[in-house]
Image (tube, rainbow, N blue to C red; front, top):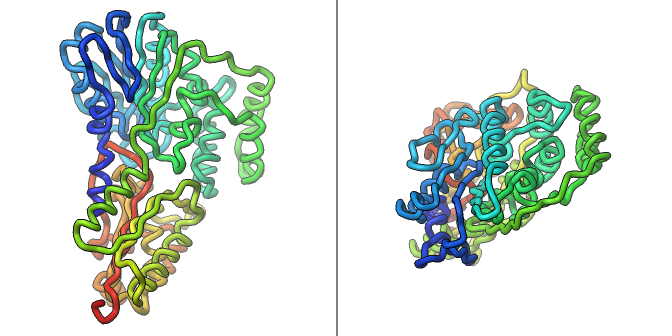
Length: 438
């Protein structure tokens, strides 16, 4: 079921579904372009789905059109997603499993800006945007360093800030986010294909809004940093000075014509997983969240309660849900290894520990990454919980130190997929066998 959800948002297939040539016209997500008036076609972008999107675009355009329009491009992706394509360069912008900005990512961001600045009025720029693009495309604002931005990202992530707050601050501290890419683009048309990893699909938040005018302000970023007491926790004054400078010098307007198209999101994956569950004979309830959910531990306990209610004779035997909770990290000296999906399932295990019969819970990141680990998530049922009890693995201890990975690992209960080349938040599957077999 979970895999069916991921398969429905495969990035290469989503792009092929939305890009096609019809004679002298190129149709992109319903937009029609007269190829006789198009000079070059350039593809740029960033994200965990970037490699698949780039491959899908090359396939959709075809070799003849690619050659005629001098197709070229640059897309920043995680290192384990890099492969050789014919026209579009895939750049390793960060190591696998390390969702933080790097010097390599900054180099790639600079290359992308140079590329879009080289375009002309008759050229078509296609942006391939997906989740994870924020960390993969760092280009610090004047007056701050990449180390400053990294410190801010680590601080806010550790404080449990939701992705919309994290991206608000990232945009205000960047030369390429918050519409910066679109402002630099000199092509006549810029069209973005977007695979959303943000609940509700706000275009100005996904990958920090590379092609969208920023609706947030420097004051919003300051308010977020102050809410989490960033100054008191050591965030350098340069960060606040840069935000003050930005407030005094508003960015220039976007000059090229820009359109944005969301071609995949969490709801698509949840619907596909639910359809597979129905095909397998389950009575299914499903929903995809449209806003931040809160703590992973709370979501895990809620799913455990839902499982108990289904088992006791509820209308459904399967719950498919989608979302993206947060985890508040403990200090690094105590911190173990894990991610939000592993933390969520372990919290559910704790809630079910005394009575897990007939219940299974799985939660996984659709990108194949859950925190700084090699797992997409985790799963648990009565057999796994019994094995843990035999080994005296107490969920509370592992939850308290963000060490869920090491609880699941010896039990063989980690969900490992490798890179999926897509990213639409998380999908969870809860199964419950009704008491009495009804």
